[in-house]
Length: 418
Image (cartoon, rainbow, N blue to C red):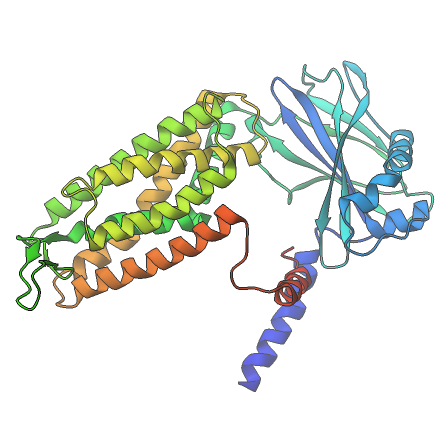
């Protein structure tokens, strides 16, 4: 046990510098987002230590946005004096938005100041950047530039690939915007779809609930007599394994096809702003969908029509997928390819998930305990579903008290995960 603890301790010592390297206190950052029609947007990221040192502030290590906002005008004026952007089309005016956000790291937080370059709709091949902020006060200061979003370059929510480094003796450089193609953007959206389905545990559990009964069929009759009671009793163990692969596979194809059709419809409608539902409602119903699909495995809601559950709740999962595209900052450019690529990625991710689960279920389907396994797993899914539904619908945490949440947050910040 002592050896394991020592190994874990040394692993933390090794990984912590690597995790925290991306945002060190004596560094500042500029992240750019390039849109085909909307032009160039971006944000400055400055560590609170720098703000305290250079502006005489007294910010905490992890301040709120409202702690920073009173000094926003001073910071904005300073950045405007020490940063400029231009191209063959001329100089761009930096227009700050009112948005300020915070990014916590291991050692404090970075304050994010968002801006747009005016009249940048016509995209240049290169963007010239002049930056001298903080260098006079701290010659060791480093400013890094990264392209966070550029659809045609295949960059979607990228924060790791640093394109340029600025130092006190290197304050003027050009950022290339030319390494782009529609194919790169399409592939990036496919990857985003795959990634989202893989990290979306609620989507995975809904799929799991749908495919659990694929390798068995209900025995007939569904209702058996109970000699001790006048009322008939439902037989939850009334399952028998399918004898061949084909009917189980057809069941999977049918259910997943209806799920796909449904979430494709609402993903498209929501992305086109035809129908927009509040996020809390969507996420709450997605949580509830897991429990209802699982309950259907115990006692059928739609006898012989499992596809109804897949289709009806798939509509809400589509709204959930659409919110992801919104979080990625996509503004409608190449919308057809974006939707197609993202949806294709979701389907590829689904196929991989099913390919991992379905063969195992098919192999164990003839075990005498499989009906009990199906019911007990379904009951577990119902419990998880209700837990998530209550949390999402009423915006409460059912388990963690404030002290535990605070301790957990400190641990996550130490590990560089918050």
